Image: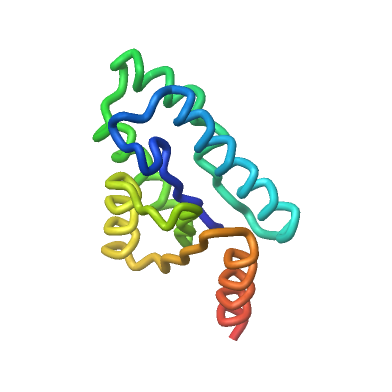
Amino acid sequence: MFRASHSIRGIKGVTATLADMEANNRRALAFGLELRRLFPKVEFYIPAEGDEFVLIAYTKTLLTEKQILDIDCQIIDKRHVLLDFIPDQYISAGMLRENLHAQTTGKPILMATNIAQARCALNSYLERAKR
């Protein structure tokens, strides 16, 4: 089971608009859906699928960034591998926290800037896991 990680605000960070965040989520969702198409027998948790709720709760200050990341780390605990989607070669503070959590809990971390890199990394990981 893989858990994808992606930046919600992107390289704009705290200056990102709601439109920026929605665009980043659409890009991450497209990435995740393509992974599912390429690897139909592998389970992927794609945060962008539920981020409409998260964005609303965050913009209305119902959830803080820390609360969101605490929940993200609990979700990571239920997965075997963290896959960072970094299309702009940018790792956000939230992604860094997820990576540190994955690392301290012994989860492998794969990184990809595009679907071709993700496919290669996943194939390699899955091949090693068979041994």
